[in-house]
Every structure is written in C-alpha cells, then in structure tokens.
Image 1 (cartoon, helix red, strand yellow):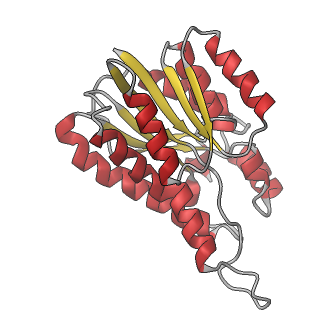
Image 2 (cartoon, rainbow, N blue to C red):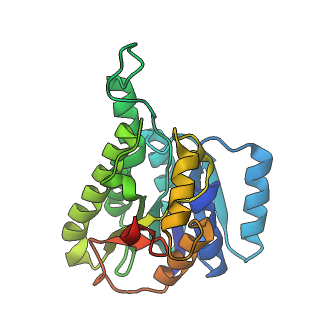
Length: 255
C-alpha cells in the first residue's frame, strides 16, 4: 500500500513535527502551507526526503477549493494510494474582541475567514478524500484543537468558535465514518510556544501560567505531538474515535 499523509499547515510548528514523525515511519507527505519562504520549505522537504519518502508541498490557502482539487487530482494519479492520515493543523485566524467602542472588533469577513480556515475546511478535505476513495480501513483523521475550544481569552473569540466547531466536526465524522472503520479524533495540545501563540494578546502571561500549572513544569512542544502522531500511524483500528485527546503533560487537569 502506498501510504500518504495529508497535512494542512505542514510547514512549521506542530504540522512540521507531524511530518517529521510520519516520514520516519515511511509515510509519504503531502503538505499544504501558506506563509513560509521557499528556501525554508526546500530545507524541510530535503529533511523529510532523507527518510526515503516522497514529499509534495503546495503553497496556498487550505480552504480554497482549487487547492483541494489540485491535491486530490495529484494524489489520485498515484497507484495503490491510501491516505493513512489527514491532519488539520492550521493556526490562522482573526484575533479581535467581539465588541469595542472604536469598532475594532470582529466583522463578518473576519469570522467567516477564521471559521472557514480553522474549522470548516477539515470537512471539505475529508469529503474530497472520501469521494475519491483515498481512505481505507484504519485511516485516521486528526484535528489539532486546544483548550480554547471551551476556554476564552482576550481577543480569542473567533478562534475559540473555530476550535469548538472543529471538535464538533470530528465528533460528527466519527459517527459517520464508523461503518468504514476510519477513526476521527481531535488532539488537544497544551500551550505550545509557536509563532501563532505569540500573536495572541497576553501570550506571555499564558505561557507563564501554563508552565506553573503543568506537572512537568514546561510547555508542550511540537515534538510531543509528533510522537503521538507516530503512535497513531501504527494504529489500524477505528475503535478510538470521537475523542478530544489531551496531549499536554497534565496541564489541563490542573489549570
């Protein structure tokens, strides 16, 4: 079987760590990214290829229908292909309050974009992969969520909505994919020091509080998530499905 992983948000942070872990397992990587410079993508691609796997990266908005069609057409052209994993690891949304006296608040286009990119497009990618018969029994669909799916911070409202929606999509898909023996889960990482985190107002305070609360006295790292993804790469069942799986060193239970 020609096993591939589609990773949305593959160029850095958790997405890149997942790509590394899966490449080490011999799984080919199809990554979609938005902002990285070409030389950075070339370096990552070369690192992954050192594990003897095929690597394809495409720059573009993962919520764009043309990008989805391009990916599906490219992957469908390969023989005996199986999408072992579809990983949604996109952190790109509008950080504004819902109300403000100076009108610097969320508008419809901000909210629509955040929900489309950070939540809804998981469904559209899943539909496209399924329609083209690229999943098989034991395939895994994984979304990266956070405590923000049920907690709120200043200016985090749109992202919180998106995370809650992402988890809801996973639950619904887990029901509908059960007859096909395909697992669908969300991974709730602990606070992870990434470029996306640094854009959240008050992130320094969040980091210090997370370190203080965590029994391990440190933040979650992208590699912590990559290690779990490597375990799931060997998982051939759909019995673990419909969950929000905490991978945070115990941070959430004490926070």
